Amino acid sequence: MYTRYSDKFGRNMVIIYPGEFYVSDQDIIATVLGSCISVCIKDRKTGLAGMNHFMLPGDARSQDMFLSASTKYGMFAMEQLINEMIKKKGSKKDFEAKVFGGGHVLNFRKSDGNVPEANIDFVRAFLRMEQVAVVKEDVGGYVGRKILFFPETAKVLLKRLETSVDSKLIRAEETYKTRLFREKEKLQQAGGDLTLF
Image 1 (cartoon, helix red, strand yellow):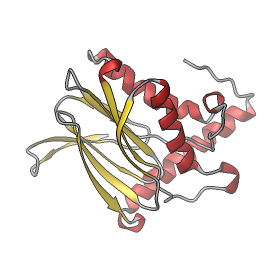
Image 2 (image 1 turned 30 degrees about the vertical axis):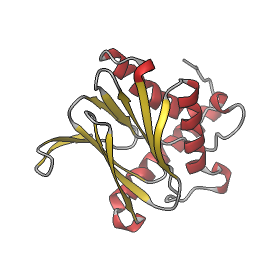
Image 3 (image 1 turned 45 degrees about the vertical axis):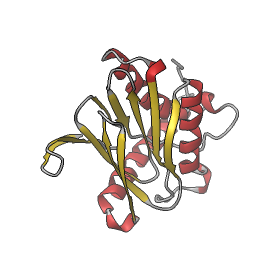
Image 4 (image 1 turned 90 degrees about the vertical axis):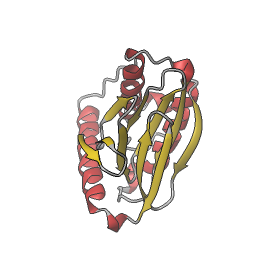
C-alpha cells in the first residue's frame, strides 16, 4: 500500500494491493482489480469507511463454503476490515457494502475451479451471513476494474480496464495468486488444520 497526494481531488489517495485493506474517514482509497474482489464498507453513522482486496485460492462454491480451507483467505480479509472499522468506533449494524471485481482475467488450472465466481459467491454469502447490506455491486465479466472509493460520501468511481492496459494489475494478482496457491498446497500437505473465528 502506498499514499500519494492527488492534485485532481486535492487530498491523499491510498492505493491498496492484493491482500491489503485500509480504513479512513477522509482519504480516497483506490485499487485495481482483476479476478480479485474488493469490498467497500461504509458506516452510515460515523462516516468511517474501508476497503479490502482479496482472492480465494480455489473453488469454494459449495454448501460447505465456510468449511473450505480456501475461504480462510476471504474470511481473514473480511474480518480484518470489519474489525478495524469496529476498533475505530464503527458499528456493524450501520454498515453497508459495495462489491467489485471477480473478472475472468487470470489463467487458472482446471482443478482450481472457477475462482472469480467463487470469489463473488463467497463475498455475497459472507455479507449476507454478517447482515451487511450490499447496496451496489459490479462483478464478473472479462475486464479488470480500477476503483476509487470516497469515504465521506461512499461514492465509488469505477473504470473498466482491458487486461492488457494495466499489466501491473496482472503481475500483482499473478504474484498474489501464486503465493496463495502455494500456501494452500502446504496446508493440505500438512494435514490442513483450519481455525474458524
